[in-house]
Length: 528
Image (cartoon, rainbow, N blue to C red; front, top):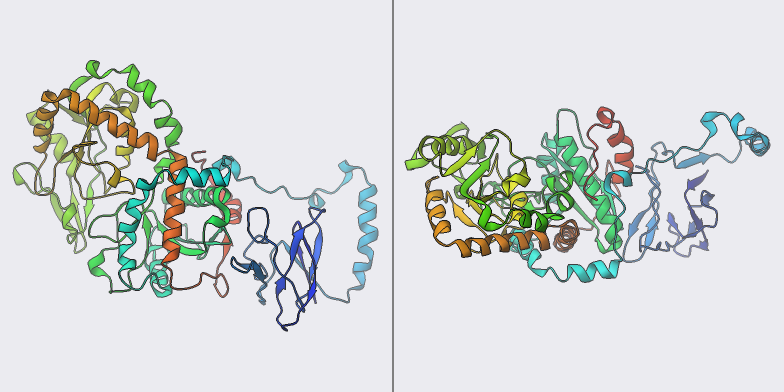
């Protein structure tokens, strides 16, 4: 039996001296869709492409080569499964194949309009319409990333739980996949990079996930964007990204040395979730919508013309808190109880609703904090003091307020995201509703701000500067690169697609499942 792989690469054979089978040698082919034989009895080596990656054939193919970045060798894994559309298996004796050259010649002689539609080549979906085509020269981008060292200070803090123990074991990773992805009825996916290419390594179960399907697709598009920018600068690794609204990996509940590594947009002192940029950066086109015109917006609303009251508009989300996460516990005004026990693992706290009710009852002239009417974010800049209250857990509203150059009064909720170490209390914002206190904190913050106007303005300008420098798309991609590199260095196993029940390139998954699930309604364009 001979196997053929359809891809724009050319084999250059070299007899095997080791007796091993399954390796292949690739070199650029002058013919972009040439059908090239792979003979398992011949030993071949992989020549990396222009981005330093081995040329993979697409699909969940059991014949797809799995690259070893160090030796740049591709291995062919035999399997009894049916080959995918990129592979064609023929037997040596098939008499009817003798007529194929004649049939091909006849078809070529026909004018194009007479070609049967099913014989025309399939046009591959172009996913760049969803995540753009913006890249920078690699050396230039790496040099830029090296100017943002402060941005990465939180990575070591997040990964300390594995640094201090036995690293990230395969057992811990499998635990993360079982508990915190759709495999365990949670909102998360298992991903990998092999040879600089992103893969899914466990089939997502999308039914019943609602809008979280869009969130998971968004993170997949981000992985494609990272692969295009950095290629094999991204080491081989296997990891989990979860999308639920609050951290779930409570450190106290984990077996020592076996903490499941899960990436999520928020965490706390009591949780081991590894912090990543929230999906809203990408779905809301953050750089273009919030940063590009930040300085012009500040000029439109000069500091001395802004209204000197506390302003905020919020939906009435309830806060979900684990009873053992002490840093996130809340009490209301005058130490009132605002939480109820839903289960042994969850408290539900009416944080926003309590603040709005308290402000409306006692300080309506000083605190314009309501659920409506809606006010555009641009018009928030007409106020000197903007309140930030977290939502179900961490809210993405803070990064939207930072560029407005107003003084932010930030709830000290105990929840954190990847850049919070860059915004420091009394340097970039004033903390309110701190642990053990209530909403009354905001009154003291307002008194200080009104009596220290110049310092308040400097604080607002410093907060805007952090957003402009560290939260733009290019800087966030640097954060992703450093995080993935640091994570990979802690793996105590060799990431390998061989033997896995499910392996599919992210690009192919989005081209097929992403564009067809719910008629493609969950696959949206992200920030370019």
